[in-house]
Length: 631
Image 1 (cartoon, rainbow, N blue to C red):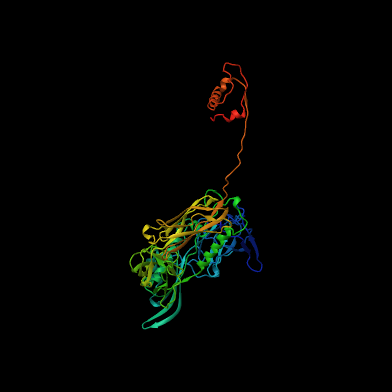
Image 2: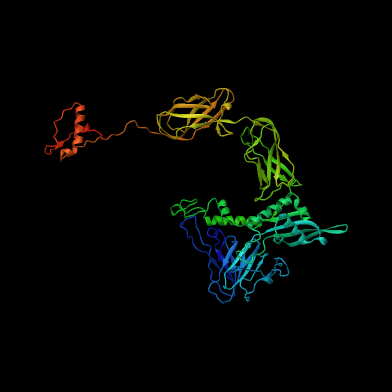
Protein backbone atom coordinates (compact mmCIF):
# COMPACT_ATOMS: atom_id res chain seq x y z
CA UNK A 1 0.00 0.00 0.00
CA UNK A 2 1.58 3.30 -1.08
CA UNK A 3 0.34 6.88 -0.94
CA UNK A 4 0.89 8.73 -4.23
CA UNK A 5 -0.15 12.18 -2.91
CA UNK A 6 2.17 15.19 -2.91
CA UNK A 7 2.53 14.95 0.88
CA UNK A 8 3.49 11.26 0.82
CA UNK A 9 6.82 11.92 2.59
CA UNK A 10 5.42 14.30 5.18
CA UNK A 11 1.93 13.25 6.31
CA UNK A 12 1.99 10.12 8.37
CA UNK A 13 -0.73 7.54 7.60
CA UNK A 14 0.35 4.91 10.12
CA UNK A 15 -0.47 2.95 12.12
CA UNK A 16 -2.42 1.19 9.36
CA UNK A 17 -4.98 -1.33 10.60
CA UNK A 18 -5.52 -4.41 8.41
CA UNK A 19 -8.44 -6.49 9.73
CA UNK A 20 -8.66 -9.97 8.27
CA UNK A 21 -12.09 -11.64 8.04
CA UNK A 22 -14.03 -8.81 9.75
CA UNK A 23 -16.24 -10.28 12.44
CA UNK A 24 -15.92 -12.55 15.45
CA UNK A 25 -13.28 -14.76 13.78
CA UNK A 26 -11.17 -11.91 12.47
CA UNK A 27 -7.73 -10.75 13.52
CA UNK A 28 -5.98 -7.44 13.12
CA UNK A 29 -2.49 -6.44 11.98
CA UNK A 30 -1.23 -2.96 12.95
CA UNK A 31 1.48 -1.75 10.57
CA UNK A 32 3.69 1.11 11.72
CA UNK A 33 5.56 1.64 8.45
CA UNK A 34 9.11 2.79 7.71
CA UNK A 35 11.11 5.01 10.05
CA UNK A 36 12.33 8.52 9.36
CA UNK A 37 14.97 8.37 6.61
CA UNK A 38 16.10 12.02 6.69
CA UNK A 39 19.08 13.32 8.65
CA UNK A 40 16.68 14.96 11.11
CA UNK A 41 16.53 12.38 13.87
CA UNK A 42 14.56 14.63 16.22
CA UNK A 43 11.26 16.37 15.69
CA UNK A 44 12.14 18.66 12.79
CA UNK A 45 11.79 16.88 9.45
CA UNK A 46 10.83 13.26 10.00
CA UNK A 47 10.33 12.27 6.38
CA UNK A 48 8.82 8.82 5.94
CA UNK A 49 8.01 6.80 2.86
CA UNK A 50 4.26 6.07 2.96
CA UNK A 51 4.71 2.48 1.83
CA UNK A 52 3.22 -0.28 3.98
CA UNK A 53 3.63 -4.07 3.72
CA UNK A 54 1.15 -6.58 5.08
CA UNK A 55 1.17 -10.39 4.92
CA UNK A 56 -2.20 -11.60 3.63
CA UNK A 57 -3.88 -14.87 2.84
CA UNK A 58 -5.86 -15.37 -0.37
CA UNK A 59 -9.60 -15.95 -0.51
CA UNK A 60 -10.06 -13.58 2.42
CA UNK A 61 -11.50 -10.12 2.97
CA UNK A 62 -9.30 -7.41 4.54
CA UNK A 63 -10.77 -4.26 6.05
CA UNK A 64 -8.24 -1.39 5.95
CA UNK A 65 -8.21 1.77 8.08
CA UNK A 66 -5.64 4.56 8.14
CA UNK A 67 -4.77 6.78 11.11
CA UNK A 68 -4.81 9.91 8.94
CA UNK A 69 -7.30 10.87 6.25
CA UNK A 70 -7.06 8.64 3.17
CA UNK A 71 -4.82 9.88 0.34
CA UNK A 72 -6.54 11.04 -2.82
CA UNK A 73 -4.40 8.62 -4.82
CA UNK A 74 -3.20 5.29 -3.47
CA UNK A 75 -1.53 2.29 -5.11
CA UNK A 76 -1.79 -1.39 -4.19
CA UNK A 77 0.34 -4.37 -5.15
CA UNK A 78 -0.18 -8.04 -4.30
CA UNK A 79 3.24 -9.66 -4.54
CA UNK A 80 4.12 -13.29 -5.26
CA UNK A 81 0.61 -14.41 -6.17
CA UNK A 82 0.85 -15.04 -9.91
CA UNK A 83 -2.14 -17.19 -10.87
CA UNK A 84 -3.33 -17.45 -7.26
CA UNK A 85 -6.69 -16.74 -5.66
CA UNK A 86 -7.67 -13.09 -4.99
CA UNK A 87 -8.20 -11.05 -1.87
CA UNK A 88 -11.01 -8.56 -1.31
CA UNK A 89 -10.01 -5.19 0.15
CA UNK A 90 -12.57 -3.20 2.09
CA UNK A 91 -11.21 0.34 2.52
CA UNK A 92 -12.89 3.02 4.65
CA UNK A 93 -13.42 6.61 3.48
CA UNK A 94 -14.97 9.21 5.80
CA UNK A 95 -16.33 11.44 2.99
CA UNK A 96 -18.57 9.96 0.28
CA UNK A 97 -17.02 10.86 -3.09
CA UNK A 98 -16.76 9.03 -6.36
CA UNK A 99 -13.68 6.80 -6.37
CA UNK A 100 -12.22 5.67 -9.70
CA UNK A 101 -10.27 2.41 -9.83
CA UNK A 102 -7.53 1.69 -12.37
CA UNK A 103 -5.83 -1.61 -13.17
CA UNK A 104 -2.48 -0.80 -14.68
CA UNK A 105 -3.49 2.41 -16.42
CA UNK A 106 -7.01 1.27 -17.43
CA UNK A 107 -10.21 2.47 -15.80
CA UNK A 108 -12.39 -0.31 -14.37
CA UNK A 109 -16.08 0.60 -14.08
CA UNK A 110 -17.74 -0.01 -10.71
CA UNK A 111 -20.27 -2.83 -10.41
CA UNK A 112 -23.16 -0.39 -9.94
CA UNK A 113 -22.64 1.51 -13.20
CA UNK A 114 -25.89 2.21 -15.02
CA UNK A 115 -25.39 0.58 -18.43
CA UNK A 116 -28.71 1.94 -19.70
CA UNK A 117 -27.62 5.56 -19.38
CA UNK A 118 -25.94 7.47 -22.20
CA UNK A 119 -23.73 9.27 -19.68
CA UNK A 120 -21.78 8.01 -16.69
CA UNK A 121 -24.30 7.28 -13.96
CA UNK A 122 -24.47 4.98 -10.97
CA UNK A 123 -27.29 2.82 -9.68
CA UNK A 124 -28.46 3.18 -6.05
CA UNK A 125 -26.23 1.37 -3.54
CA UNK A 126 -26.93 -2.27 -2.80
CA UNK A 127 -24.90 -5.07 -1.19
CA UNK A 128 -25.34 -7.17 -4.30
CA UNK A 129 -22.71 -5.02 -5.99
CA UNK A 130 -19.96 -6.11 -3.56
CA UNK A 131 -17.40 -8.19 -5.54
CA UNK A 132 -17.23 -11.88 -4.84
CA UNK A 133 -14.01 -13.75 -4.03
CA UNK A 134 -14.97 -16.25 -6.72
CA UNK A 135 -14.67 -13.54 -9.38
CA UNK A 136 -11.72 -13.51 -11.77
CA UNK A 137 -11.98 -9.81 -12.69
CA UNK A 138 -8.87 -7.95 -11.55
CA UNK A 139 -9.87 -4.64 -9.99
CA UNK A 140 -13.60 -5.35 -9.76
CA UNK A 141 -14.90 -2.66 -7.43
CA UNK A 142 -17.85 -1.02 -5.74
CA UNK A 143 -18.14 1.98 -3.41
CA UNK A 144 -20.98 2.06 -0.89
CA UNK A 145 -21.69 5.73 -0.02
CA UNK A 146 -23.89 4.69 2.91
CA UNK A 147 -21.12 2.88 4.78
CA UNK A 148 -18.11 4.67 3.27
CA UNK A 149 -16.42 1.41 2.21
CA UNK A 150 -14.70 0.83 -1.13
CA UNK A 151 -14.43 -2.82 -2.20
CA UNK A 152 -11.64 -3.84 -4.59
CA UNK A 153 -10.85 -7.38 -5.77
CA UNK A 154 -7.12 -7.99 -6.31
CA UNK A 155 -5.23 -11.08 -7.42
CA UNK A 156 -1.83 -9.50 -8.11
CA UNK A 157 -1.63 -9.70 -11.89
CA UNK A 158 -1.23 -5.89 -12.12
CA UNK A 159 -0.96 -2.90 -9.82
CA UNK A 160 -4.23 -1.26 -8.78
CA UNK A 161 -4.73 2.45 -8.13
CA UNK A 162 -7.69 4.30 -6.77
CA UNK A 163 -8.26 8.03 -7.22
CA UNK A 164 -10.80 10.06 -5.30
CA UNK A 165 -12.62 12.35 -7.71
CA UNK A 166 -13.45 15.70 -6.05
CA UNK A 167 -17.00 16.85 -6.70
CA UNK A 168 -19.45 19.58 -5.71
CA UNK A 169 -22.70 18.25 -4.25
CA UNK A 170 -25.58 20.72 -4.20
CA UNK A 171 -29.05 20.31 -2.75
CA UNK A 172 -31.52 22.78 -4.24
CA UNK A 173 -34.91 23.20 -2.59
CA UNK A 174 -37.64 24.34 -4.98
CA UNK A 175 -41.38 24.41 -5.54
CA UNK A 176 -42.05 22.84 -8.93
CA UNK A 177 -44.78 21.30 -11.05
CA UNK A 178 -43.72 17.67 -11.20
CA UNK A 179 -45.95 16.98 -14.21
CA UNK A 180 -43.82 19.34 -16.30
CA UNK A 181 -40.47 18.79 -14.60
CA UNK A 182 -37.54 17.45 -16.64
CA UNK A 183 -34.19 16.82 -14.96
CA UNK A 184 -32.27 17.51 -18.14
CA UNK A 185 -33.52 21.07 -18.22
CA UNK A 186 -32.09 21.73 -14.73
CA UNK A 187 -28.69 20.22 -15.58
CA UNK A 188 -28.55 22.14 -18.86
CA UNK A 189 -29.51 25.42 -17.23
CA UNK A 190 -26.87 24.99 -14.50
CA UNK A 191 -24.26 24.17 -17.15
CA UNK A 192 -25.19 27.33 -19.04
CA UNK A 193 -25.03 29.41 -15.87
CA UNK A 194 -21.59 28.04 -14.94
CA UNK A 195 -20.22 27.93 -18.46
CA UNK A 196 -19.23 24.25 -18.24
CA UNK A 197 -19.91 21.11 -20.25
CA UNK A 198 -23.37 19.63 -19.42
CA UNK A 199 -21.73 16.20 -19.09
CA UNK A 200 -20.19 17.40 -15.81
CA UNK A 201 -23.61 17.87 -14.16
CA UNK A 202 -25.93 15.11 -12.98
CA UNK A 203 -29.22 15.23 -11.06
CA UNK A 204 -28.56 12.29 -8.75
CA UNK A 205 -31.74 12.36 -6.69
CA UNK A 206 -35.13 14.09 -6.38
CA UNK A 207 -36.61 14.05 -2.87
CA UNK A 208 -40.30 14.99 -2.57
CA UNK A 209 -41.13 16.80 0.68
CA UNK A 210 -44.81 17.65 0.17
CA UNK A 211 -47.35 19.09 -2.24
CA UNK A 212 -49.25 22.35 -2.56
CA UNK A 213 -52.43 22.26 -4.63
CA UNK A 214 -53.33 25.15 -6.89
CA UNK A 215 -55.86 25.49 -9.60
CA UNK A 216 -55.05 23.36 -12.67
CA UNK A 217 -51.64 22.29 -11.29
CA UNK A 218 -49.98 20.44 -8.47
CA UNK A 219 -46.87 22.08 -7.04
CA UNK A 220 -44.51 20.09 -4.88
CA UNK A 221 -41.70 20.99 -2.51
CA UNK A 222 -38.72 18.99 -3.69
CA UNK A 223 -34.99 18.85 -3.06
CA UNK A 224 -32.85 18.28 -6.14
CA UNK A 225 -29.52 16.62 -5.37
CA UNK A 226 -27.06 17.69 -8.05
CA UNK A 227 -23.48 16.48 -8.44
CA UNK A 228 -20.90 18.37 -10.45
CA UNK A 229 -17.82 16.33 -11.29
CA UNK A 230 -15.77 15.13 -14.25
CA UNK A 231 -16.69 11.80 -15.86
CA UNK A 232 -14.09 9.05 -15.32
CA UNK A 233 -11.00 9.08 -17.51
CA UNK A 234 -10.22 6.00 -19.56
CA UNK A 235 -6.54 6.13 -18.55
CA UNK A 236 -5.00 7.00 -15.20
CA UNK A 237 -2.89 9.79 -16.70
CA UNK A 238 -5.66 11.31 -18.83
CA UNK A 239 -6.77 14.91 -18.21
CA UNK A 240 -10.19 15.30 -16.59
CA UNK A 241 -12.90 17.65 -17.78
CA UNK A 242 -12.65 19.83 -14.65
CA UNK A 243 -9.99 20.01 -11.96
CA UNK A 244 -10.02 20.99 -8.28
CA UNK A 245 -9.54 24.69 -9.02
CA UNK A 246 -12.44 24.60 -11.47
CA UNK A 247 -14.67 22.96 -8.87
CA UNK A 248 -13.86 25.71 -6.37
CA UNK A 249 -14.88 28.27 -9.00
CA UNK A 250 -18.12 26.36 -9.54
CA UNK A 251 -18.81 26.45 -5.80
CA UNK A 252 -18.28 30.21 -5.77
CA UNK A 253 -20.50 30.78 -8.81
CA UNK A 254 -23.38 28.74 -7.38
CA UNK A 255 -23.07 30.48 -4.00
CA UNK A 256 -23.01 33.95 -5.52
CA UNK A 257 -25.85 33.19 -7.91
CA UNK A 258 -28.15 32.03 -5.10
CA UNK A 259 -27.24 34.84 -2.71
CA UNK A 260 -27.61 37.60 -5.31
CA UNK A 261 -30.97 36.16 -6.45
CA UNK A 262 -30.02 35.23 -10.01
CA UNK A 263 -29.96 31.43 -9.60
CA UNK A 264 -33.75 30.98 -9.52
CA UNK A 265 -34.31 32.87 -12.76
CA UNK A 266 -31.40 31.08 -14.46
CA UNK A 267 -32.87 27.68 -13.56
CA UNK A 268 -36.46 28.77 -14.13
CA UNK A 269 -37.31 27.50 -10.64
CA UNK A 270 -38.93 28.96 -7.54
CA UNK A 271 -36.06 28.28 -5.12
CA UNK A 272 -36.55 27.87 -1.38
CA UNK A 273 -33.09 26.79 -0.25
CA UNK A 274 -29.60 25.84 -1.41
CA UNK A 275 -27.09 23.67 0.41
CA UNK A 276 -23.55 23.18 -0.95
CA UNK A 277 -20.90 20.66 0.01
CA UNK A 278 -17.48 21.75 -1.25
CA UNK A 279 -15.12 19.33 -3.02
CA UNK A 280 -12.71 17.34 -0.91
CA UNK A 281 -9.49 19.24 -0.27
CA UNK A 282 -6.68 18.52 -2.72
CA UNK A 283 -3.26 19.33 -1.19
CA UNK A 284 -0.63 21.21 -3.17
CA UNK A 285 2.92 22.17 -2.27
CA UNK A 286 1.94 25.84 -2.12
CA UNK A 287 -1.03 25.22 0.17
CA UNK A 288 0.99 23.01 2.51
CA UNK A 289 3.79 25.55 2.85
CA UNK A 290 1.38 28.44 3.46
CA UNK A 291 -0.61 26.54 6.04
CA UNK A 292 2.42 25.25 7.95
CA UNK A 293 4.67 28.30 7.40
CA UNK A 294 7.61 26.18 6.31
CA UNK A 295 8.25 22.68 4.99
CA UNK A 296 11.38 21.44 6.81
CA UNK A 297 14.16 20.14 4.60
CA UNK A 298 17.63 18.76 5.24
CA UNK A 299 19.07 18.73 1.71
CA UNK A 300 20.23 22.33 1.16
CA UNK A 301 21.77 24.22 4.10
CA UNK A 302 21.57 27.52 2.20
CA UNK A 303 17.85 27.21 1.44
CA UNK A 304 14.91 28.13 3.64
CA UNK A 305 13.58 25.86 6.38
CA UNK A 306 16.82 23.89 6.70
CA UNK A 307 17.19 21.64 9.72
CA UNK A 308 20.52 19.88 10.08
CA UNK A 309 21.55 17.19 12.57
CA UNK A 310 22.92 19.87 14.91
CA UNK A 311 19.54 21.62 15.02
CA UNK A 312 17.45 18.66 16.11
CA UNK A 313 15.25 18.95 19.16
CA UNK A 314 13.57 16.26 21.19
CA UNK A 315 10.47 18.27 22.06
CA UNK A 316 7.64 19.78 20.08
CA UNK A 317 5.18 18.51 17.46
CA UNK A 318 6.68 16.45 14.62
CA UNK A 319 5.99 17.78 11.15
CA UNK A 320 4.38 14.46 10.24
CA UNK A 321 1.83 14.95 13.03
CA UNK A 322 1.29 18.62 12.11
CA UNK A 323 0.37 17.67 8.54
CA UNK A 324 -1.82 14.88 9.89
CA UNK A 325 -3.69 17.36 12.08
CA UNK A 326 -4.02 19.77 9.16
CA UNK A 327 -5.50 17.04 6.95
CA UNK A 328 -8.02 16.15 9.68
CA UNK A 329 -9.00 19.81 10.00
CA UNK A 330 -9.51 20.10 6.25
CA UNK A 331 -11.61 16.94 6.21
CA UNK A 332 -13.78 18.26 9.03
CA UNK A 333 -14.46 21.37 6.96
CA UNK A 334 -15.22 19.32 3.84
CA UNK A 335 -17.75 17.15 5.68
CA UNK A 336 -19.88 20.20 6.50
CA UNK A 337 -22.56 21.39 4.14
CA UNK A 338 -23.27 25.11 3.95
CA UNK A 339 -26.94 26.08 4.09
CA UNK A 340 -26.88 29.36 2.22
CA UNK A 341 -28.80 32.46 3.28
CA UNK A 342 -29.91 35.25 0.99
CA UNK A 343 -28.78 38.69 2.24
CA UNK A 344 -31.30 41.51 2.07
CA UNK A 345 -29.55 44.40 3.85
CA UNK A 346 -26.03 45.64 4.55
CA UNK A 347 -25.49 46.90 8.09
CA UNK A 348 -22.67 48.62 10.01
CA UNK A 349 -21.54 46.89 13.18
CA UNK A 350 -18.63 49.21 14.07
CA UNK A 351 -18.77 52.88 13.12
CA UNK A 352 -15.59 54.64 11.90
CA UNK A 353 -14.13 56.72 14.75
CA UNK A 354 -10.92 57.98 16.37
CA UNK A 355 -10.10 59.75 13.10
CA UNK A 356 -7.11 62.00 12.49
CA UNK A 357 -5.79 63.53 9.29
CA UNK A 358 -3.87 60.98 7.16
CA UNK A 359 -3.96 58.42 10.00
CA UNK A 360 -5.89 55.14 9.83
CA UNK A 361 -9.06 55.19 11.92
CA UNK A 362 -8.41 54.00 15.44
CA UNK A 363 -11.71 52.12 15.17
CA UNK A 364 -12.07 50.66 11.67
CA UNK A 365 -15.53 50.14 10.09
CA UNK A 366 -16.95 46.63 10.33
CA UNK A 367 -20.00 45.49 8.35
CA UNK A 368 -22.29 42.48 8.04
CA UNK A 369 -25.49 41.47 6.25
CA UNK A 370 -28.87 40.17 7.40
CA UNK A 371 -31.55 38.14 5.64
CA UNK A 372 -35.20 39.12 5.31
CA UNK A 373 -35.89 37.84 8.84
CA UNK A 374 -33.14 40.00 10.34
CA UNK A 375 -30.79 37.08 10.96
CA UNK A 376 -27.11 37.62 10.34
CA UNK A 377 -25.80 35.91 7.18
CA UNK A 378 -23.00 33.64 8.43
CA UNK A 379 -21.36 33.11 5.03
CA UNK A 380 -21.35 35.56 2.15
CA UNK A 381 -19.62 34.25 -0.93
CA UNK A 382 -16.84 31.70 -0.41
CA UNK A 383 -13.32 31.77 0.96
CA UNK A 384 -12.11 31.35 -2.61
CA UNK A 385 -14.29 34.18 -3.96
CA UNK A 386 -15.62 36.48 -1.19
CA UNK A 387 -18.01 39.41 -1.59
CA UNK A 388 -16.41 42.86 -1.49
CA UNK A 389 -17.54 46.14 0.08
CA UNK A 390 -16.26 49.51 -1.19
CA UNK A 391 -16.24 52.74 0.81
CA UNK A 392 -16.89 56.23 -0.60
CA UNK A 393 -16.90 59.60 1.12
CA UNK A 394 -20.46 60.97 1.04
CA UNK A 395 -20.02 64.14 3.14
CA UNK A 396 -17.04 66.26 4.17
CA UNK A 397 -14.01 67.64 2.31
CA UNK A 398 -10.98 65.60 1.35
CA UNK A 399 -10.70 61.98 0.22
CA UNK A 400 -10.56 58.46 1.57
CA UNK A 401 -7.07 56.97 1.43
CA UNK A 402 -5.36 53.60 1.81
CA UNK A 403 -7.41 50.45 1.14
CA UNK A 404 -11.00 51.51 0.48
CA UNK A 405 -12.31 47.93 0.09
CA UNK A 406 -12.72 44.92 2.36
CA UNK A 407 -13.71 41.28 1.82
CA UNK A 408 -16.22 39.22 3.76
CA UNK A 409 -14.85 36.48 5.98
CA UNK A 410 -16.97 34.43 8.38
CA UNK A 411 -19.86 36.81 7.77
CA UNK A 412 -17.99 40.06 8.48
CA UNK A 413 -16.25 42.65 6.34
CA UNK A 414 -13.72 44.73 8.29
CA UNK A 415 -11.50 47.47 6.88
CA UNK A 416 -7.80 47.47 7.79
CA UNK A 417 -6.35 50.97 7.33
CA UNK A 418 -9.09 53.26 6.01
CA UNK A 419 -8.34 56.97 6.59
CA UNK A 420 -9.21 60.53 5.49
CA UNK A 421 -6.55 62.94 4.26
CA UNK A 422 -8.06 66.22 5.56
CA UNK A 423 -9.16 67.39 9.00
CA UNK A 424 -12.70 68.64 9.43
CA UNK A 425 -16.15 67.75 10.72
CA UNK A 426 -19.42 66.32 9.44
CA UNK A 427 -17.85 63.42 7.57
CA UNK A 428 -19.97 60.43 6.52
CA UNK A 429 -19.00 57.34 4.52
CA UNK A 430 -21.18 55.23 2.20
CA UNK A 431 -20.55 51.47 2.13
CA UNK A 432 -21.79 49.37 -0.78
CA UNK A 433 -21.25 45.83 -2.03
CA UNK A 434 -19.42 46.15 -5.34
CA UNK A 435 -18.64 42.47 -5.93
CA UNK A 436 -20.42 40.57 -7.25
CA UNK A 437 -21.78 43.29 -9.47
CA UNK A 438 -25.15 41.52 -9.57
CA UNK A 439 -25.72 42.11 -5.82
CA UNK A 440 -28.03 45.00 -4.96
CA UNK A 441 -28.43 45.46 -1.21
CA UNK A 442 -28.35 49.23 -1.18
CA UNK A 443 -25.99 51.58 0.61
CA UNK A 444 -25.15 51.68 4.32
CA UNK A 445 -24.15 55.17 5.52
CA UNK A 446 -22.06 55.78 8.61
CA UNK A 447 -22.85 58.20 11.40
CA UNK A 448 -21.31 61.68 11.06
CA UNK A 449 -17.88 62.06 12.64
CA UNK A 450 -15.02 64.57 12.88
CA UNK A 451 -11.43 64.20 11.72
CA UNK A 452 -8.79 65.72 13.99
CA UNK A 453 -5.60 67.46 12.89
CA UNK A 454 -2.40 65.73 11.92
CA UNK A 455 -1.35 63.56 14.87
CA UNK A 456 2.06 64.68 16.17
CA UNK A 457 4.33 62.90 18.59
CA UNK A 458 7.97 62.97 19.67
CA UNK A 459 10.59 60.33 19.03
CA UNK A 460 14.16 59.74 20.21
CA UNK A 461 15.97 59.62 16.87
CA UNK A 462 19.64 59.59 17.92
CA UNK A 463 21.19 57.78 20.89
CA UNK A 464 24.25 55.50 21.24
CA UNK A 465 23.69 51.84 22.01
CA UNK A 466 27.09 51.39 23.73
CA UNK A 467 28.71 54.36 25.48
CA UNK A 468 31.85 54.72 27.67
CA UNK A 469 31.16 56.06 31.13
CA UNK A 470 32.02 59.67 31.89
CA UNK A 471 32.28 60.38 28.16
CA UNK A 472 29.90 62.89 26.53
CA UNK A 473 27.25 61.67 24.08
CA UNK A 474 24.44 63.25 22.08
CA UNK A 475 20.70 62.56 22.07
CA UNK A 476 18.20 64.02 19.59
CA UNK A 477 14.45 64.20 20.23
CA UNK A 478 12.44 64.88 17.06
CA UNK A 479 8.88 66.09 16.50
CA UNK A 480 7.28 63.15 14.66
CA UNK A 481 4.41 62.91 12.15
CA UNK A 482 2.58 59.71 13.18
CA UNK A 483 0.38 59.67 10.10
CA UNK A 484 3.31 59.65 7.66
CA UNK A 485 5.78 58.02 10.08
CA UNK A 486 8.45 60.62 9.42
CA UNK A 487 9.78 63.86 10.99
CA UNK A 488 7.08 66.53 11.05
CA UNK A 489 7.22 69.21 8.37
CA UNK A 490 7.93 72.82 9.26
CA UNK A 491 4.26 73.71 8.76
CA UNK A 492 3.23 71.25 11.48
CA UNK A 493 5.57 72.48 14.22
CA UNK A 494 3.66 74.12 17.12
CA UNK A 495 3.74 77.91 17.07
CA UNK A 496 4.80 78.14 20.72
CA UNK A 497 8.25 76.84 21.80
CA UNK A 498 8.46 73.17 22.76
CA UNK A 499 10.82 72.24 25.61
CA UNK A 500 11.98 68.66 26.22
CA UNK A 501 13.35 67.25 29.50
CA UNK A 502 15.29 63.96 29.80
CA UNK A 503 15.08 61.45 32.64
CA UNK A 504 17.14 58.27 33.14
CA UNK A 505 15.29 55.01 33.88
CA UNK A 506 16.31 51.63 35.35
CA UNK A 507 19.74 52.85 36.42
CA UNK A 508 21.20 51.19 39.53
CA UNK A 509 24.05 53.62 40.29
CA UNK A 510 24.66 55.78 37.23
CA UNK A 511 23.64 59.44 37.23
CA UNK A 512 22.73 61.40 34.10
CA UNK A 513 24.64 64.68 33.92
CA UNK A 514 24.85 67.51 31.42
CA UNK A 515 22.15 69.64 29.86
CA UNK A 516 18.95 67.61 30.33
CA UNK A 517 16.52 70.31 29.19
CA UNK A 518 16.50 71.74 25.67
CA UNK A 519 14.16 73.70 23.44
CA UNK A 520 13.27 72.35 20.01
CA UNK A 521 14.78 74.12 17.02
CA UNK A 522 13.20 73.27 13.65
CA UNK A 523 11.47 70.37 15.31
CA UNK A 524 14.56 68.84 16.97
CA UNK A 525 15.77 69.09 20.58
CA UNK A 526 19.53 68.34 20.82
CA UNK A 527 21.32 67.26 24.01
CA UNK A 528 25.05 67.17 23.15
CA UNK A 529 26.87 67.06 26.50
CA UNK A 530 25.25 64.16 28.34
CA UNK A 531 27.34 61.80 30.49
CA UNK A 532 26.65 58.86 32.80
CA UNK A 533 29.15 58.21 35.59
CA UNK A 534 28.80 54.48 36.18
CA UNK A 535 28.60 51.17 34.37
CA UNK A 536 24.99 50.28 33.51
CA UNK A 537 23.17 47.74 31.39
CA UNK A 538 19.75 47.97 29.74
CA UNK A 539 18.99 51.55 30.75
CA UNK A 540 16.88 53.99 28.73
CA UNK A 541 15.92 57.67 28.59
CA UNK A 542 12.48 59.25 28.72
CA UNK A 543 11.84 62.50 26.85
CA UNK A 544 9.01 64.72 28.13
CA UNK A 545 8.12 67.51 25.70
CA UNK A 546 5.55 70.29 26.15
CA UNK A 547 4.79 73.84 25.17
CA UNK A 548 2.85 76.55 26.96
CA UNK A 549 -0.33 75.40 25.26
CA UNK A 550 -1.86 71.91 25.12
CA UNK A 551 1.03 70.08 23.46
CA UNK A 552 2.45 67.37 25.75
CA UNK A 553 4.13 64.21 24.45
CA UNK A 554 6.39 61.52 25.92
CA UNK A 555 8.90 59.28 24.10
CA UNK A 556 11.09 56.49 25.41
CA UNK A 557 14.47 55.68 23.88
CA UNK A 558 15.78 52.27 23.02
CA UNK A 559 17.81 50.56 25.75
CA UNK A 560 21.56 51.14 25.83
CA UNK A 561 24.62 50.17 27.89
CA UNK A 562 27.42 52.10 29.65
CA UNK A 563 30.84 50.43 29.82
CA UNK A 564 34.11 51.26 31.61
CA UNK A 565 36.63 53.49 29.86
CA UNK A 566 40.13 53.05 31.45
CA UNK A 567 42.54 56.00 31.32
CA UNK A 568 45.70 53.91 31.95
CA UNK A 569 46.99 50.63 30.71
CA UNK A 570 50.06 48.39 30.83
CA UNK A 571 53.02 49.17 28.59
CA UNK A 572 55.74 46.60 27.90
CA UNK A 573 59.29 47.74 27.09
CA UNK A 574 61.97 45.43 25.71
CA UNK A 575 65.73 45.94 25.28
CA UNK A 576 67.45 43.79 22.69
CA UNK A 577 71.20 43.42 22.11
CA UNK A 578 72.78 41.68 19.16
CA UNK A 579 76.16 41.22 17.51
CA UNK A 580 77.19 40.93 13.91
CA UNK A 581 80.22 39.05 12.64
CA UNK A 582 81.11 39.32 8.99
CA UNK A 583 82.11 41.71 6.28
CA UNK A 584 81.33 45.34 7.04
CA UNK A 585 80.25 46.04 3.48
CA UNK A 586 76.99 44.21 4.06
CA UNK A 587 75.93 46.58 6.80
CA UNK A 588 77.48 49.73 5.32
CA UNK A 589 74.04 51.45 4.75
CA UNK A 590 72.97 50.71 8.29
CA UNK A 591 76.18 52.00 9.79
CA UNK A 592 76.06 55.17 7.69
CA UNK A 593 72.52 55.84 8.82
CA UNK A 594 73.40 55.14 12.41
CA UNK A 595 76.46 57.44 12.28
CA UNK A 596 74.38 60.21 10.73
CA UNK A 597 71.79 59.87 13.46
CA UNK A 598 74.42 59.98 16.16
CA UNK A 599 75.95 63.13 14.67
CA UNK A 600 72.57 64.78 14.57
CA UNK A 601 72.22 64.13 18.28
CA UNK A 602 75.74 65.46 18.98
CA UNK A 603 76.93 62.15 20.28
CA UNK A 604 80.53 60.98 19.81
CA UNK A 605 81.37 57.41 18.88
CA UNK A 606 84.62 55.74 18.01
CA UNK A 607 85.61 55.76 14.31
CA UNK A 608 84.19 52.71 12.62
CA UNK A 609 86.09 50.30 10.45
CA UNK A 610 86.42 50.84 6.75
CA UNK A 611 85.28 48.36 4.24
CA UNK A 612 88.83 47.42 3.42
CA UNK A 613 89.63 46.59 7.02
CA UNK A 614 89.55 43.10 8.30
CA UNK A 615 86.23 42.00 9.88
CA UNK A 616 85.74 43.33 13.39
CA UNK A 617 83.14 42.83 16.11
CA UNK A 618 80.71 45.71 16.65
CA UNK A 619 78.74 45.79 19.89
CA UNK A 620 75.66 48.02 20.11
CA UNK A 621 74.54 49.14 23.51
CA UNK A 622 70.91 49.67 24.55
CA UNK A 623 71.58 53.42 24.52
CA UNK A 624 72.69 53.19 20.91
CA UNK A 625 69.72 50.97 20.06
CA UNK A 626 67.38 53.62 21.39
CA UNK A 627 68.64 55.93 18.66
CA UNK A 628 68.28 53.29 15.94
CA UNK A 629 66.39 54.62 12.90
CA UNK A 630 63.07 53.09 11.84
CA UNK A 631 63.04 51.58 8.32
